[in-house]
Amino acid sequence: MSTLRLAALLVFALVAVSSAVAEEGFTPLFNGENLDGWVQRGGEATYEVDADADGGPQIVGTSVASTPNSFLCTDRDYGDFVLEFEVLVDSSLNSGVQFRSQCFDEPQTVKLEVDGPDGESKEQTYKIPAGRVHGYQCEIDPSDRAWSGGVYDEARRGWLYDLKADNRAEARSAFKVGEWNHYRIECVGDHIETTVNGVPVAHLHDDVTPEGFIALQVHSVGSPEQVGKQIRWRNIRIQEIEE
Image 1 (cartoon, rainbow, N blue to C red):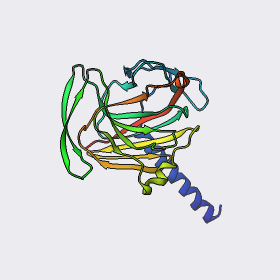
Image 2: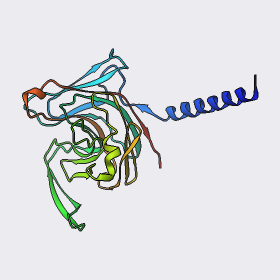
Image 3: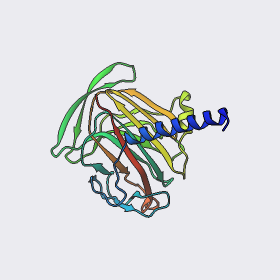
């Protein structure tokens, strides 16, 4: 065997070992068989498992009429982590994945600092109804707006990181409509980063919610044509980061 070929094989082996070690750090959030470990909150969209789907087992959310946003939530909270998943969404729907999110049994009033249009921050009061899922959301947006990967504060402050700026054109083009898309969300302390199909999208610092559950959203729909449309998730996994 030539020295060059031996060196190439050694490099391949090192890469393979490195990848295997990285994979070991992740834990599946979906067992591929049922929805154990998940609980539905909010609206009444349906969630089911397609265990025999092409490309591997999937969680399938289906939109229904006359119901608010629906969320399939993990039954435990996460603080610092890397979350990865793949998603395929009907082009007529809007969706997202919640992270570090919460849901109260009783109505709550929270006061948060919000940046005004003049750059000055001010205290804003938010009333959170009982049972309302709220918190950070990574956007899944197949519309022409193309804000996939942006970060929205569900039921609180609204957009924390949108994609409307001219210098975010590359991020707007990362999501592929009608195809499977790979997402990565990284949260460490107050630092939040998202990527879509390997393209960096959002990066921000926010310390309002240091931990919370992860949830798969089926958005409410406003027209009969949107009823019965689906969003699919697969390969949902998390790597918790210890301090």
